[in-house]
Image 1 (cartoon, rainbow, N blue to C red):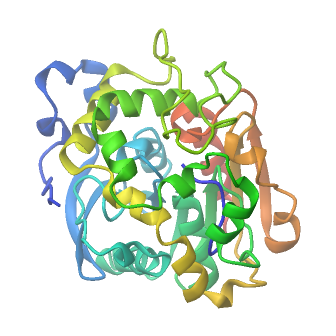
Image 2: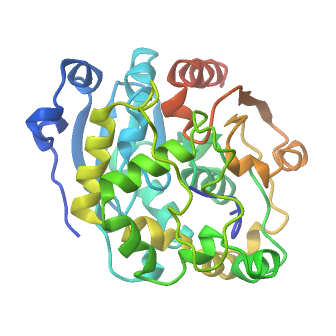
Length: 353
């Protein structure tokens, strides 16, 4: 999960077989198998590292970039829909996640490295250009890819995190001034090993709590994110759901839990540890505008939008076609509201020249 800041804010799974082969038998329900049966998996080399790809369809390339703590799997509802609409939908495991390589150095997760991988994926498929879509951390990856490489990314779609320009000072400096003695998860994530120990103690519980707490179904008014003090942990205050919401199945938790139990959370957390580095490495983002056609989709109950305004996009994304807020939807837009999100994605894509 990301609130926009910064520069606009170990094992390889060679998955050529169906993804269900990597699941415990108890999770292979007919519904889950139907959902993913036409999704193909392969590993490609992008910017010198191995990236696991889930893909479906033929046609113009649409690159779907996930956030924290997610996987290609967060786009499971979009891959078949985009394929049916005539597109080649490609959802990678971002470096550090799932079946993709997870380099050791923290700096290997800088924004510039992620953008280079995105371009490397286009190159691996022989695509001169693509539409790039991102959710959560994938959104600033998408926005920044569009700004820095307009010749490769002809349009951009962002879910949850709007486009904001470079902050006036390094993000961690600003966050320390703002939050002082209060807990803020981005600051908590900065020390290597701390959040890893908390989240990896029980990956299944961590994913269940977090996915529910940041969703539109949580009724605690953000208790897991607000009013916390230094010394608290990330999961402090997050409520155990009495039952999973309709959009989140046991099979979904099983898949996420299995992958993060195998890989840990280090790769995803290292993205947060590069926010000041991003600020230093990308001064050209100061005053930048996104000129390509753009679409934004957010949830009205998404905590990110409590402290991130949509207003600057009006000036900074002059070709913003639409900014959609989904009533009752939380942070996990494409998972919580797949039908509505798919409809908006396809409507936007069909209108592109």
